[in-house]
Image 1 (cartoon, helix red, strand yellow):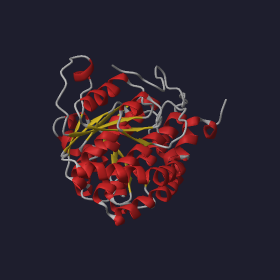
Image 2 (cartoon, rainbow, N blue to C red; image 1 turned 180 degrees about the vertical axis):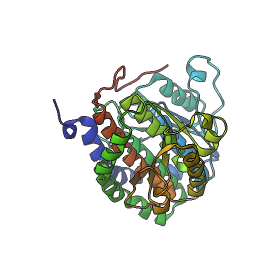
Image 3 (cartoon, rainbow, N blue to C red; image 1 turned 60 degrees about the vertical axis):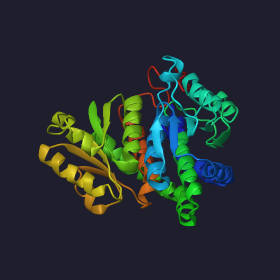
Image 4 (cartoon, rainbow, N blue to C red; image 1 turned 90 degrees about the vertical axis):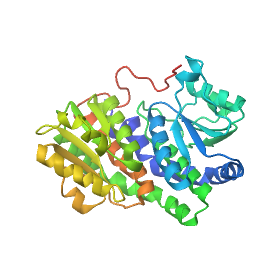
Length: 350
């Protein structure tokens, strides 16, 4: 039986600093050229077609391209194209397809129809020869190399980085490019949280349900980490923003109920801290991912991010901590790390 270090998931999690360096080095000019095309066109709307992990990249793009670039960003409903045959008007939109494999027919159908309507189409994929890449006018390569574990890790962070690079290229901010350049080193340091992740996993060993909290840029992180916990550890993990949790679902929180909070420094931190106070009063068992010492001190368990990055980039480092926790919890529960039950690496939906 392989040790944890010999699993694909462990290796791919630890490959991420180099993957991100590759994406920065190889795709910067491609993305700058694409940004020039976007800036020349009358585009105010971005429509993103994605599934699964890539859908969570879309959630990040919704916040970042909205906050930093002023776009109205929405997630496509692929079944409108493939099942209902009621195709929305996309002519003046940037239509972005995100898929590690580039194989899913419904995502391909969205970009194919968008291109026929005259929309600007872009794919972010780990296979530049895939059908998705072929149908898109422009393609950004994740540069992640083969990803063999069913649970996506390095393709997720590479996709986040590609979106962040596009936002930066559209703005033309050298300061933001400098902040992007520091991300691989920040990720390297975050990987040193492995021992803390093991300790947190021991605490949650018998958990079978939880909620995962994030807001703003890290709303995407809450969804992605909840997905990792579901597919790897079989925990029923529900993602919420603090606002959504308080609008009804808070009723499920009772004494020792597991709650995982993504709470890096930034505009959303006071909002998370207010929720933490209510969770404490309800007796919840909180695990906090943060770079803020005061916030970490409020938790029952913690994964302290060792490198503070700007809030707009924090989803990249925060999910690394989450990946390590999910990996260690899967191993602690003695589950199949690389091949979760009932799942396949490439999923084709229609």
